[in-house]
Amino acid sequence: MKKQESYVCVDLETTGLNPKTDKIIEIGAVRVENGTPVEIFETFVNPGCRLREQITELTGITDEVLNGAPEITEVLPDLLAFLREDVLLGHSVLFDYSFLKKAAVNNRIRFERLGIDTLKAARRFLPNLPSRSLDFLCAHYEIPHKAHRALADAKATCRLYDRLWEDFGEKEENAVFAPVMLQYQVKRETPATPAQKERLYKLLIKHKIEVEYELDKLTRSEASRYTDRILATYGR
Image (cartoon, rainbow, N blue to C red; front, side, top):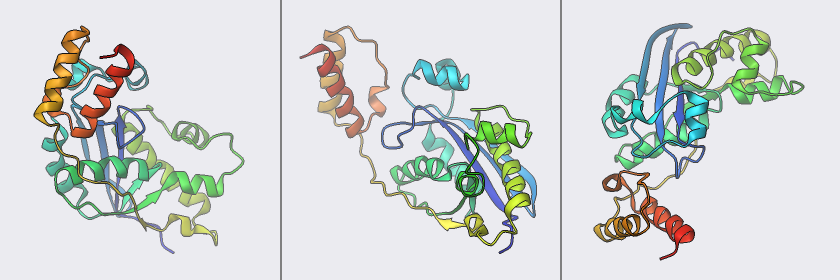
C-alpha cells in the first residue's frame, strides 16, 4: 500500500476523557497535501463550565482564556469546512473523532470520516517501548514538541506519522497505516428543561454553591448529573 500523502491531522484539548460528559476546549488541525503541511486551524472553545485544576495544570489553559472564546456551535462551520471530507490523522484518533462527532450530532450534522491512528501503528511496531504516548514517541524520535496544546500536538503527530512510515511502511503488516472508517455511536442531546434549571438554581442558592456551569446551556443529561451530584454531596 502507498502512504497517505493528503489528510488533516486533528487534535483536541478537552475538559476530561469522556466524550459523553466532557467538552472540547481547544482544537488544532493541520492540512497536509502531497506530504506537505499547507494550512492550519486553531481555536479555543468555550465549554460552558469551569475547568478542573488538573486540566489547567496540564494544558496551561485557564477559565479566563476560555470565557471570551467562541462556543462549539460557532466553531463547527469553519472547522468542518477546513476538514472537508478528508482522511483524519491522529494519535488515538478515535478520541478526537468521538468529541467532534458528538458536537456535530448535537448540531444535526452528519459526521463520518476515515481515519489513521499513529498510536495503533506505534503499538504494532514498537511494542517494547515503555510507553507509546505522543510525548514519549516524540522524545524517542527527537521530534520537537510542546505537549498538551492542540495545534502543537497535531503538528507533532504529522511528524510522527512520517517517521513511523519511514521505519515501518515497507513491512508486510503495514495495513495498520490504511485509513479505516471511524466508529462512534452518539445520540443528539436536548437542552435542559425549565423545571430542571429551576430546581438546580434553587439547590445552588440553598446550599450557597458556586456555579460550575452556565445553566442556560446545560443539556438534560448534564442538568440531571449536576443535580444528582449536588444532592449526593449536600442533600435536599
